[in-house]
Image (cartoon, rainbow, N blue to C red; front, side, top):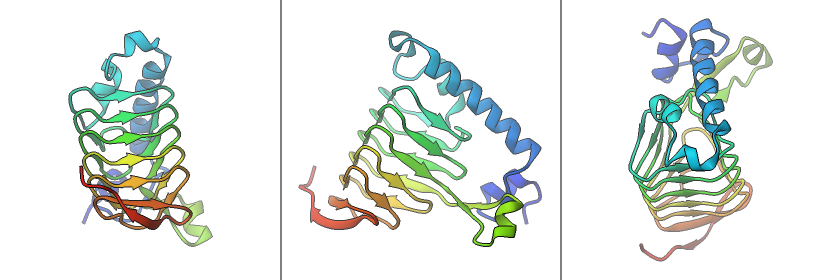
Length: 188
């Protein structure tokens, strides 16, 4: 059984986010994100050095527009040619894997943390982290929200403003709140 709050978070157990070790990791991420967001666009390159050092992995040709925000960074794994448009927020308390060629529109939000259902648990900072996976060549429309534990299949399209509460199959299109299937996308 995991003992530190970070170990509990990584193991998918209930943990308290009010923890000095986790706060130190969030400060490191905020500093790297601030550096990235403060650079002129021509100096950011595909992914600036500060973010490249922070993130779990970045493929070739990854672009992250500013402003960008992530909670920890080390749980974020980006495939080749991933594009994150301006305003993306990824709360990576669990692994977030985004497949090659996937595009995230402006203000997309990915939340891995689920807070406790009881007020006393929330007050104590209790949360549990669930991973999010997005397959290759998916398209996530602007202002979409992807909740904890969701997998989105390769070639899928998530419409702008959708709130994705459950898995999305390959080559399908979902829209709405909560997101619902509207059509199968053409194969890529």
